[in-house]
Image (cartoon, rainbow, N blue to C red):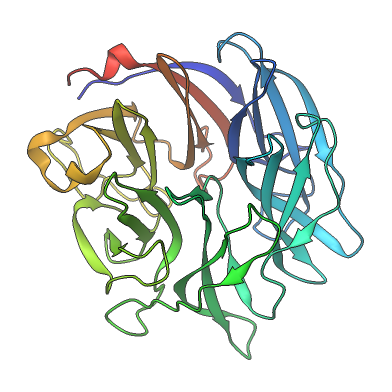
Length: 359
């Protein structure tokens, strides 16, 4: 299977920053591209201290420079992480991110000067509970509604958490106020070990919203909404997107094609060797391309399959995708030889549209 793209950024984990990733891209009004991501400074664990750091490209993703922290932690916070960007209707930039510390929530800040400064954070969930929010997940639907998918886990007395359940918050006034959809969508097999986790969204031309969640069932689970995210069908196992317990990302390239980035597991056409798992087998890293809005992802005859990474000794996860005029930028975690976890270094690849024309 063809490997596509060229490396343009590889920020390796080090003693100062043991983990760097889970970010998102946005085009600035001056033409530059900003990529903001979680930069951990006191270890690489899920609950270690992290700030949101940005790098910039002024040459259409060929190089990235000017690393800077976007804002500091608020009092009581220990983590800012998992970035999503959205351009608001008035031209401002909204940044969404998770916080942990004295409280846990998803925050929204707004910048009216193209990311130089940001407003104070506004909590979106603002209620008790253990909610997980991932990077590159905010969707503006065709109606203008902003949808923010979350996964709620029940907290156990011993300090652990239970299976994930898909829910979402939404705004009909461009982020000024947020409402709970009161969805609580569970895995159809009940209290299965991990439930539905790290749900992402995309929308087809007919208005259908496609939601996809990682599971420990060796496949993504999928469900659909016909009413702008207010209700969803019962989740079902995907027969297309085999997957370990690892998130998938889907990106539309308007009027051209759609791409899905994921770890195919346990096997797929073209993978000749199945070897011992690397971090839940988050390897290799695949990009499936279909023409149009993505509604034909469900028929394999329309697929064009490529690899972003084919080194089975490393693992990859948590992609975000940016679309340029004739290229994609794909950012993701790269284990970089580390055998005990994928969540280490930051890789960005640039993929020309011409590379995706045929497998």
